[in-house]
Image 1: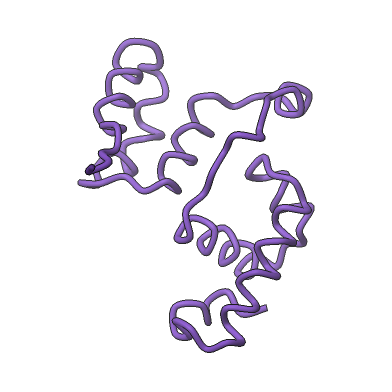
Image 2 (image 1 turned 120 degrees about the vertical axis):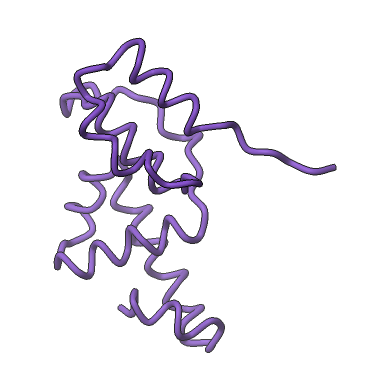
Length: 124
């Protein structure tokens, strides 16, 4: 059974056309890509649905999932901008314990030597 992904690009283009025409320019660079990654989707949702800190804390975040590439990009962003776990968690609407867990898990993968070149950008 082949799993297919929703047509995120079409969905967000329709949303921008119908509900958020004023935010179209902010999303153009992301939507110009042929295929959207989970990281791109997070960025578009941040642009479209910016919420106050209290609204963010009320959202149910238990059912979110992130693929390996998205996790590595978030950890790379943390390293490049010299942020601590709390700052990264706040930026992406995560728990700081989630960020700490990702760092531990991907540090163990790096130490074991699997896919070493790719994970060097996230060396801890």
